[in-house]
Amino acid sequence: GENVEQHPSTLSVQEGDSAVIKCTYSDSASNYFPWYKQELGKGPQLIIDIRSNVGEKKDQRIAVTLNKTAKHFSLHITETQPEDSAVYFCAASQGGGADGLTFGKGTHLIIQP
Amino acid sequence: KAGVTQTPRYLIKTRGQQVTLSCSPISGHRSVSWYQQTPGQGLQFLFEYFSETQRNKGNFPGRFSGRQFSNSRSEMNVSTLELGDSALYLCASMDGLASSLGSYNEQFFGPGTRLTVL
Image (tube, rainbow over all chains, first blue to last red; front, side, top):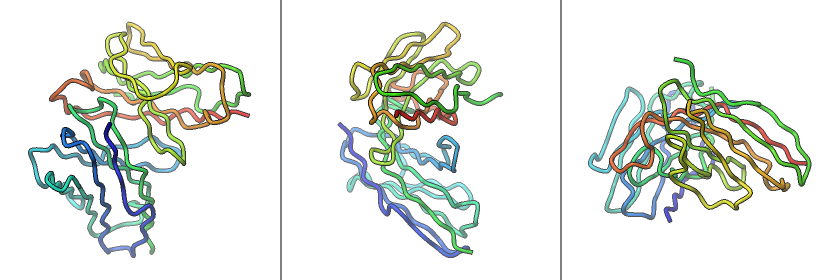
């Protein structure tokens, strides 16, 4: 089955700086890669996703890149703000929105004022 | 539209008991998936239901089961509880069949049910 590795487990950045979280996946058949943000006491919320036919996608301060050959994808957050502090999860799946999304272990992003 | 709701939000049970958790998806959504979240294992897929049928299942023992009703509401049941079943149980709803090839609809997660087994 699919295996997703996520790094780092904790990331502390100064407010206004950029943050990068990286994930690798094992199943070359995976074609959908969402990123979720989970705040304390809440369920994960989709913040951006990318399909395998696209190399990069951007939405305001958030961007995701995908390298299918190397089987890795990354989340980039620019101009970080205090409200960006949360746990971020990457995931991979074959076929679409779920099909048993395989999640990374999460990255606790801390924005230092 | 109202979001995904899960009840109860918190549960405390003892080993050997059984528990039933409930999930109401977003109105119009027919797919409900369940996930277990623990600090050690992270988020793990349990199963997906669509149109009252289980369509996909993760690698969990038979003690974990579920069902879906005609109004798309779903329940999951855990029998003979073990200490290791303590976790946050999340459900996610989606418009369409999640495991369908080419389906890229967003999953919406509920706030979860925190289960503690003593």
